Image (tube, rainbow, N blue to C red; front, top):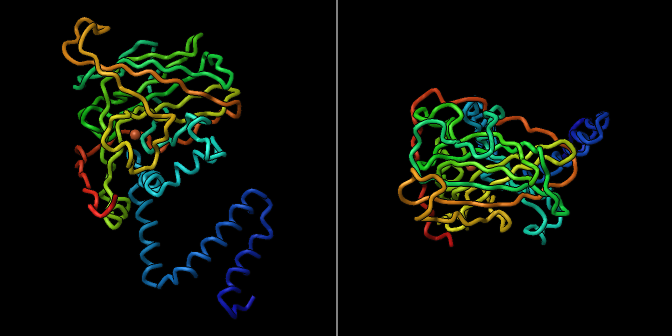
Length: 319
Ligand SMILES: [Fe+2]
């Protein structure tokens, strides 16, 4: 087609998809082309703005490596990850809180954490922080326990760093995989995680600064539940008293994932514990479906120094 008008370009690109044999690919690309072309027209994107968009996308890829995934971080910061999760796990959004305990995967899952016994301590090296004792049940929609499910767990240290970011933590610290028992239960000891600022040394940081947003995530523990016959579930259980619980930079907090990290001062499960300790209990509901493990966003540890934990202050005009 000889292009005569802007609309001819859209029509021509769509026509180019006519020969696609994968119907789902065709459906997604047709919609993507229509929306992207409409976006360019609606915003009257200038040439320099378009060049800037291309540079940002290139930078997202350039910054993604074995221990950091800027692309996933960007998806989270634009609410895409949370939207994909809810649309795939709780399509009736008016009843989200009652429909799913699923949440986004996030950029810090590694797919090779150590197989651990129920009751094991995830603090694999010298790890400061208040002890926490966690019990998590996996049940089906009828409330029946799901036994022999693999439950992967990972979270930050009390300093707010995942082990892959922090060279001072031993490999796989605060990570482990457990198998549910006949009650659908896993239990483990660890240290109480801290909320943390997401990295802002790339395009995601630039985005947040231009918006006047802070970069904090409320404290949480990640879970990934896998068993043949059930839809693989990613989840995060959030500390309900965290100061950032209402303004998660990744838009991940739903009511069904709020939990009380109970503080105790007496009768610790381990008599060697002196001072405060915490307990957490949560139940995950899994649906029947396909058990598919996602591609791990990262594969290893940061080989450089400890990254700077830069906290962006929210624009006071935002309420
Ligand atoms: Fe996280």
